[in-house]
Image: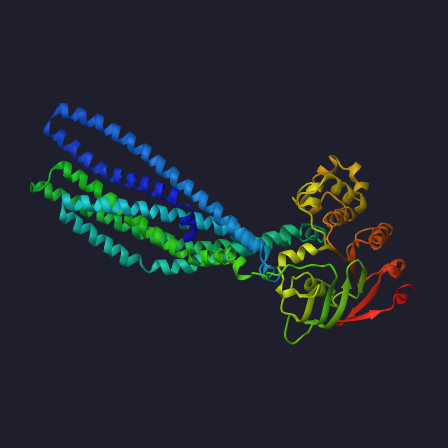
Length: 547
């Protein structure tokens, strides 16, 4: 977090200066009240009138300073939070797939919402408040010594007692706050799962059961937060009690000093006022410090996300696909005792068409992830024009291929933006992709055409329409390698045939089709056909798939 304070040091300095003025001004009220009471007791009417005018002006000035101080603190908090959230999001979304999928979507959503809220309230705002409270404490302490060393000694004793009583709570709060953050992440994940599964739950009449499951998760989340809240309540309760006791002690001692003629009534009022300006910061400091300490695990977790770009730096080589992509004796396993791919060897040449067949679970999708750099830790070599994949820039590798998956995902945007993905293309390129993918066929029935909003994950479209949009998304980018990963499975056989046939006849595209259900009428158009079984890849004669 230090870099965010440094990044905003100008605003920080202004906020601290205004906070200092506000704290000193608040402490100075006690001296104004002392003078007012002493003048009133002495009966000096003319001086009393002047003091009244001065006090009103002083209060108006203090109100303006307090407003500006609060405004500067909030502005600084918002700037830091915006920058911090941007960096965390960039770190998450920039992760390599192998790392990204180690955590769930709910973990990331919780980090961007729940954890950010904790950082705002319990760290940034708490630290700024702590600075102002320390200034107020120092100012009150100096004035107290000047007015009555005895009263100061009583307050210092109360302060030390409060510190000793509450010192142990901070460590416990740190653990509880970490538990709260993790439980909120789990709760967010369960909510996402239940809402996403609405259609399944409704069709199988599991709504009542789902409500009961939610109640259980809701209880867990509330119970975890309440455990932390109990410690905060204990912290605040002890602080308030000790504050009241110290204030009572100050009043009695000051009253005695008035009785024996050691101080005036105005000084008594000033001491009572200053004791509040002394103890209130102490109380709030004792409440803020545990909050700030409790944020260490949360900030550490968010910091891990912001540093992902450095930790997961890919190679620096520039990948190309002018000649070929080659697998040489590639083996891969998620677990050491179970190899998923064994000795995969094949070569794809630019402009040719390839098909990989095989039943579900045989390793086709894993091979695709290796090809596009989404998996690491393989044995053997994957070569892009003779360059080893692990030495290449991952972000550039992804630009060499466009993958049309079986499971389509559309953003809650227009058809146009789901094709462009906020990238700049000419209207001619867009029109060509829309026409070739078949999106143009259903545009007339959609109000707004390309500007038609598709709904959450394309809820306003049919499965075939969604898949056509993803095809247009791939075609418009002119990637040298196009991968159909069961990519036409949601289309009717006639349409699927027409699209695949068009891709096969396009000489500018290197096509890799991965499927378990090949279209026999098109197999003769592929240059090479492979069959995958039990993690091994064998070249097959095309005639096998035309019978």
